[in-house]
Image (cartoon, rainbow, N blue to C red; front, side, top):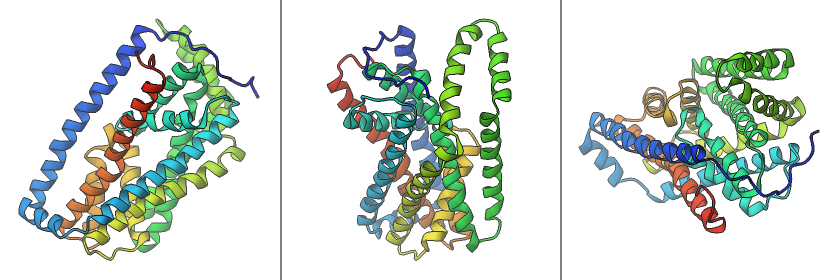
Length: 336
């Protein structure tokens, strides 16, 4: 185990880091505007009058319950974040600051595969001086265990439908490939060596990649995958229940297993097809599954899809901005 990382004064961030953050935040706004257009298109296709009628009869308390379930997902995943910090011996970070740092990563959760959540490593560096190369691999470990959790939910939910195991098999193959690559020092060292041979920044990037790989290798040991995987299953099941309770708000008595299959399958599809926030992919797969397998009418499926996306993805972005604003009050120089 490497030496523990403690709270040390961070180095001043470079102007390039600041400009990259600002550029990414502008992209988030662009994706939000695109999402508005995409959702309006879904509404038009399903029929504005029919959708309006379905929303008029919707039990809105279920949307509040969906928000609470989504926030429960964030809390469980925060426990996973804390677990990974402990494995890497990153100490001295106040729990409240750690929670806000974790939530701030949701600001860039609309990036493909949510890889933009590495933003929280920049926040951790600027507030506590933790090198980004040490903490950034946590994002990869989080995505791996999230994938495993989502695949488990698909496998369980697919017992009610035909064809569900196909998505679970595709996701399992992806996870297994990544784990084999990370577990093999020969393959990983060879890949990093290729990067170091590249002209330009390759030689400077190599040492950081080697440091990041050591952290990732420690995080993905079999003994370190068990607890995070169980936390991921529980966390994503809460968001599956968010879809289930919203469907009940529309008067659709879908089972929790069926809702889990709809939500988890659409989530996996967005992970396998790298588009910002899964925009267009998640919505299409979810709506199609609800209509074809859940016997939900077009307007009801569109309404449920829109509300669950607002209660999960876009609620997360708002929570991220809220957490970041609190952190900037505590640390005025953050992202300055």
